Length: 90
Image 1 (cartoon, rainbow, N blue to C red):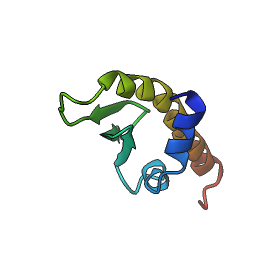
Image 2 (image 1 turned 90 degrees about the vertical axis):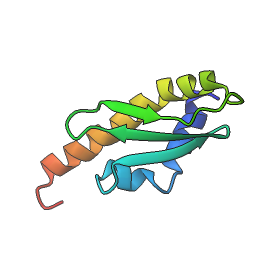
Image 3 (image 1 turned 60 degrees about the horizontal axis):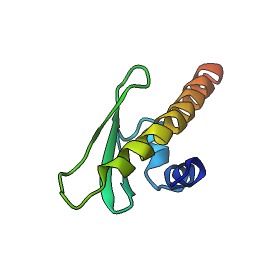
């Protein structure tokens, strides 16, 4: 899975808009059959994620996904925050 594929997974998710806009504190996605729940902190762009344990899962795929996903999600959050700061009516 490359960076563009990961970006497509994130941006095509039905949940990402609510996550970015703060209506939902968790972003659930599925990476090659592995369910991931990504949580963000209220301040900053720190994340943690939760995975179910299953010996059949290749967790290296999750690590690779997160390595690309966090900068993508962080950029989306920063853009949302900038928009809210520059548009007080938003």
